[in-house]
Amino acid sequence: MSSDTKLMAQIAPYQPWLIIAGVFLLFFLLRITRAGLRRRVDEIGYWLFGERGRLIWFWLNAPGVMLHELSHAFVVLLFRPFGFRITSITLFRVKPTPVASVGGRRVVRNGGRQSLQLGEVQYVRPQGRFMSYIGDGLSGIAPLLGGIAMFAFLYWVATGYLLWDFPLDTQQHIRLLRPDWPWWTLIFAPYLILTVTSELWPSRQDWHGARWFVSGLLVLAVILVLILWYTSQLANMLTISAFVAAHIDFALLILLGLDLLFLIIAEVLVHAVRR
Image 1 (tube, rainbow, N blue to C red):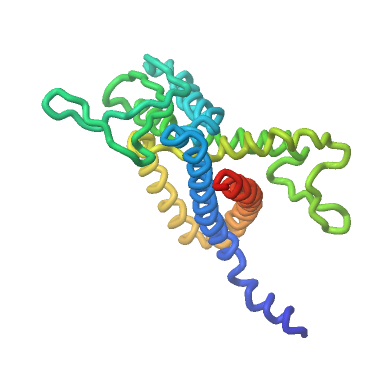
Image 2 (cartoon, rainbow, N blue to C red; image 1 turned 30 degrees about the vertical axis):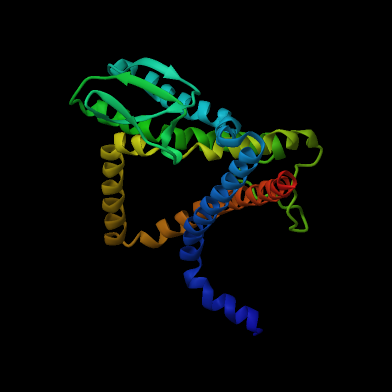
């Protein structure tokens, strides 16, 4: 038995856990690359337009911001039979966000990412009802669900493959595009994927509104794990989880590759504007 075969045999019992851990590692790396990309875009904007240049990142992400807000609004409309009603929608607006009131005056946070409000969906709903908590929760995490759905659609538009398909040919080589798929979709789809995934993460306010719903889901997940452990079905659940995690890893690797590509382009532009 070769050393590689021995190594694979030793890793095999831990492979599902490694695949699941890969989701968190890749997500962490993606956060780092996306923050680095934003810093470079901010620097390019500063060199070109001074203080106003920090708005470039927000305007670049306008499609993602609009999808973010429309995802909120879509869920609110779904819960209209339960008394939910939209009072105002702002799809994209860059303005200072008031965070406190002192002596009747609004105090605006200076600098930082949270000092700008990009969009807003305001709605009313009945107080104290069970479905109100469900609606608040789903509305809060709606950008995450909507962003993932749009990413899957744009990935198909760009490559012709579904996100859960591993694009391998008969020789087990990765194919970027499905055979006979038009190449020109790669001109615009990567940018839309970038902006959609930049804005799919719910804001702090969104998470706050969804806290009871998310907490309930976590409690149910813990109960499910305990039931599976008690019935000796946890191994089967781990296999399914690893299968799903493998596809998530693949999606995150695609995003990471796109980030590195845009980082290289941004780095070239940074050096160009510094001259």
